[in-house]
Amino acid sequence: MQEEDKPLILVTNDDGITAPGIRHLIKIMKTLGDVIVVAPDSPQSGMGHAITISDNLYCDPVTIDKYSKVKEYSCSGTPADCVKIATQEILKRKPDLCVSGINHGSNSSINVIYSGTMSAAVEAGVEGIPAIGFSLLDYSMEANFDHTTKYVKRITQSVIKNGLPMGVVLNVNIPKAGEEKIKGIQVCRQANARWEEKFDKRQNPQGRDYYWLSGEFVNQDKGKNTDVEALESGYVSVVPIKFDLTAHDFIRELKSWNIDD
Amino acid sequence: MQEEDKPLILVTNDDGITAPGIRHLIKIMKTLGDVIVVAPDSPQSGMGHAITISDNLYCDPVTIDKYSKVKEYSCSGTPADCVKIATQEILKRKPDLCVSGINHGSNSSINVIYSGTMSAAVEAGVEGIPAIGFSLLDYSMEANFDHTTKYVKRITQSVIKNGLPMGVVLNVNIPKAGEEKIKGIQVCRQANARWEEKFDKRQNPQGRDYYWLSGEFVNQDKGKNTDVEALESGYVSVVPIKFDLTAHDFIRELKSWNIDD
Image (cartoon, one colour):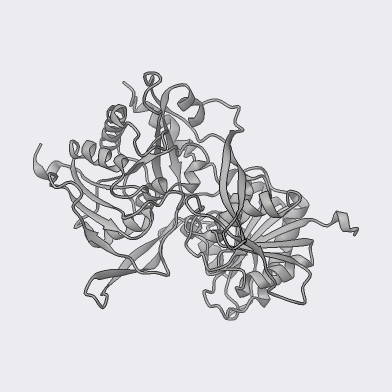
């Protein structure tokens, strides 16, 4: 393959540029194309689709791996900021692909709306760049990513080959290493699940109450073909997601309310 | 109407608890039900669906209007945090409605994914609470909200009367006051628009480069019945949005890729 035929791949994440998940993703992407990394300088988990509008941003070249030729930039902003600044200020041309992750922790089902990893992929999608977010169902910073390589590579190659329609990005979740062998890849839909929050109420040394968010994940979805079900059955889940949030099915009924009369 | 028949309404926003937009919304909601306010202690614009998972949260009673009997709480977290902590820690029962806003600035079209206002409404929706986000197309903190009253009231009353299906919340945008009279309310879909970012590159006093995000809103949507079109024509736009992000239309084609073979 000639140099100019190689796809230009933008890599980002939400756990920060030094996280093992993004280091593993960079290694895989180097086998598939020309890689540029623009990622947050610190963890940004749970940032949703936040962008920095009331503060300035730093974005500087950085060397994490001195044996790598990949150009990397560390950005003070959110994952969505990283994609914006990469495409506008860092990259000389529009990338052929943007991959985000590999996130340390699940972004299946409702987690997608809180996810910094997926917000970077969505931001790229908004800019017309085919994009994939990858997540591993293991929150540990010592998580084993070895078993993800095969699936990340296969899915990425499929996207490079087939492209993605405008307005669609992929949300890929991969079971944790260990217990049993992964059975394959399943294309599925986002499960209807939620977090049942609990707040741990404490007092600071000055006697003021404060709270820590915690919670329990509850899958309310008894239907078939969900990402949660696929993952629990030992499959990698691939959910195509879109950022036209319109509930088209409900428009007719809402019109029948005649709010305007 | 008896006391117990009054709907319990949770009010929040993303511009902070003292912003004129939420003060106006509280005033309207007091005419429709029992109101409790849990809102951010500082502006949270552009926060998307961020939640606070690596830091603690404060949430304290506060008096903004000493002549009002409405209970108000100021929270150190994001709009989504406010809804979570309100339903879990502050409210004695599940509210009948959650309203967020009135935002100082548009949340039409793609702005919905960056919006803290809408993330609060979506968070309520995830918890099974009918929810509406209201925004005014005027970023000024001195914006005139008088003309919004009629529309906010009418849409809220419709939702109280009809309910909303699980998984759907409303995104309401209202034209700026002044130029011409509002023509009415239109139920519509999210326009396919985006921001063309520009970054203003500067140097700090120590000589290090930094960036300010700015950009231009570009409506790429030539189709009919979009929120942007409705607003430009002088209507209040009402878009039903959902948080099942699955691109159901694309699942069949994605399966035909046979990624797993």
